[in-house]
Length: 230
Image (cartoon, rainbow, N blue to C red):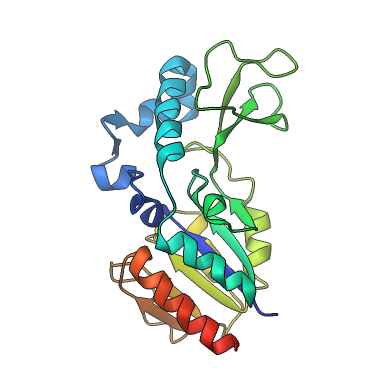
């Protein structure tokens, strides 16, 4: 069974109504990302950071997967599919994808500020000041903030290096280290980039651009790949 690795970004979630900060000039619904999405922001005003992610959590809970998320699941009938997502929502899981790697953390989880190995599911949408881990330390959102290491990159790189087909959907390929995964694709393997914008690396003969939104382009690509697998 051939292996398909998908790298998804904010564009696919945006179609489900989850706003992206880059589309708003560095603002997330009026919030400066430096005030809510950095370790410095947490040190300065943790209650503001907690409130910000509580609001994001509500939005994620209310959001539904779109055709881009749903049709990727269909590939699992004929391919070994791994989703590597830069998104912190769980829309891929809601759609039914069985193997999802979250590069930048998960909104639905919290972790200890004392021991990062202590990670917990959040019941409902609230994580509040005073919520603590089993060792008595304050819990923070299980999110990789700007300026922090991306611990799942090594795992993601390993998956991409074994790909037979690589699909990029809803990401500009300009945010590192995630954008560097393109260089881990084995030489000569097909790469599909689904994004309305003109893709970078267009000179690569193995890259096929699909200049459509995720909900339009992914179903067409999935239909093609399923036909090829028969």
